[in-house]
Image 1 (spheres, helix red, strand yellow):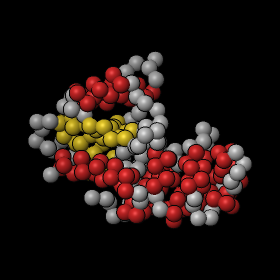
Image 2: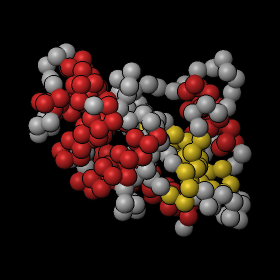
Image 3: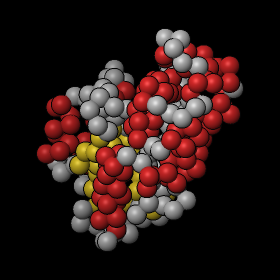
Length: 225
């Protein structure tokens, strides 16, 4: 089910996935779309992404605006699902409304964002490769500063280049998501990570993470059967 070349992803990890046909359509509508889902996501024909800032009035918070757009999209009859982070919770009213209308929710595990899942669940080689890609983008000095800040000066870039321990993995997940210059928030950076690092390492990743990814792929493929 996984693309053999790897995964493709957008820059953020909350996404609305929709299959390229509405309930009752003949299946031809939008089948040729090739877009990305945010997070560690698949490159699949017939799957589109709804942007975070679609939907309701500008006065609403971005996440709330996104959920309003997602609920509305489902109301149009499109087969729709969500993959979301779990470090911040959406409004239960909107989430429940989406589920009641037949939407499906995938999410990372309790309290985790995409960065937490990647650095906790990928095999050692992939974790180190993610770190080195961040260095390629921002340079050793800035990445070292991020690691020191995230660890309270307990870890350095040199130390994190060793075999990833649980403490190193936790630190890298935190450093990766720093508010200023987050490592992989650009589309190009996360696309590279998904295609060249996460995808090839997925089969050797932690079972729970793999299960979430495969569940999303199964949902996509079920609509195309």
